[in-house]
Image (cartoon, rainbow, N blue to C red; front, side, top):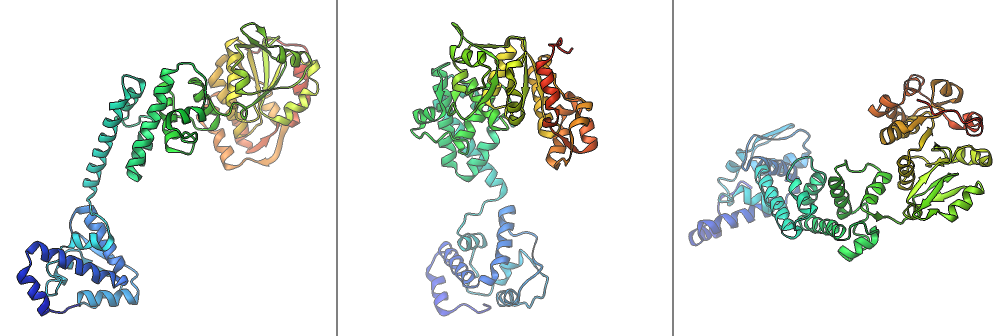
Length: 453
């Protein structure tokens, strides 16, 4: 490496401009580095200095160099280093001063070596800001005087739903980020132009984007649409499938309309003309009715003959209890775990009619968290059913709570709304509804006691 200029190189210097000499020397030095992969780690560290500062600064360090790396460094610098290697970044210019690479520009050399364009962190931020402003400006030009335009304005504020998702997407693929934003805005415009018109998600997607899968939950457009709709409703973005389905229903967007279900026995389901005849026949026959969002979209009101409804989350418990449905004084509903969009729609209709909701769940993080959600959503209409410390002692198992389940018991809403959670946290053992079946059946078939305060 440590050679002097050849005659050919001297001839080139005499005839070429300074700019040409810099480009040629930088290209030659990059070729030299390409032929010596043992210098790769040293050069990567130097590249990072340029990206951070815009110039060579600080020290380049290699704490665990291999023999091949030490030999390549000696050949390049003319200095015999031992581990750990520490070289001032500014020293690299001096190492080529007496070689045929003397005219090389280090920034250009590194760009050629790594096939990149070096930008400082500040330059990267400025470029990102320019792209962001350009993307929002172009989107606003087509948004019109709609909620879409208002959301675009809101995106300029940190914390606005969709901002973080969109900025990350812009860094990864600016073109795709712009396309996804335009498509999401197009969906909101379609909804505004067709107020209250029910539409399946795939149909909306095909109508606006030509692709029925463009709004799927794992696509950028689909995720942006969710963030935007949450902003329009003034709510936090959904955390699970049920919340996502519920948000869509606020805009009359349906998913497949049949996979989300809720089971019940005994409820009076009414249309504008009176009780729905199909559900009436099932009610009078004490049969289980499994409802989907498609079914519930045809129901205008829902009520209980007794003014109250009992609700469980466990399917096996529900099935066992409904073997005696002909003796129930009140309807029974099963959410099958975390309430689905169908379950929430049914419970919303019941709450609208002033129906008291008696909720029972397992004594673990999931069951008590659902109970807390019920209280937050329906307030004083909710009564905790078989969820006392005495009930817990009767159904407590020897199954230890998982870490996730235990942490759920300590969430703010569970602590605030579910008193028995303290006893469950203390024992760290789950309790299961199956062991309270006799008590629950007695509650459903015995004398109808007044609603608890």
